[in-house]
Length: 265
Image (cartoon, rainbow, N blue to C red; front, side, top):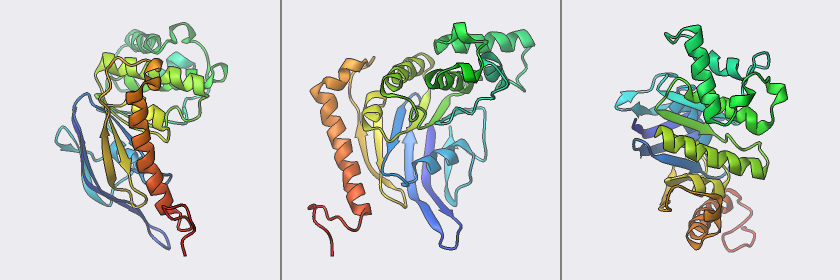
């Protein structure tokens, strides 16, 4: 599915209104993996939440295959940093919960849940409860749940942000395999530049609030990708480019620092 974002604007009402998005336009082609990066508070998560239909924009529109997004839909799966699992349900039941409303028998729901847990490497832990799972395992359950009803677009907001470095890398490699096998359109939000370059076809850098598109960096690295890629000159050059773009925005956001490193007056 194709995801289009046209002149998207969002202002949060307050005593002093907060303009989070100042007119964002971008298009994700079918099966493309695009990651949003930028300084804290630049509107990345707000944009993703609007695309998910969880909050309403002030202006502009989001289209899925030409149809306006007016709320949550089964065409889009969503994964957040917090695992949002039901603690009283085991892993299989948490995945099955997302299949409520589908025209499936109890056995069919079970089979679909087991299939997707196996896909994320948890086929042997289907009866484990969230308190029995590590952070990485919980996020695997969340990914399985988001994919079990076969959405064509996957929206992910810092899904690996709470994981340790090694688990995070393993989850990145898992996500790439899932994306390659399911051929999803993915919009991913992260603060981790290495992660963004490693997993993406394109990295979109946002400006400070109000968020706009500052730069789009095409990641023309070969697939499939493995950990060793991150030590190559090509990867490091792309990483440096994205970091420099974000750093420029960081310096602009701090009125006490000038681009030359001295204090502004």
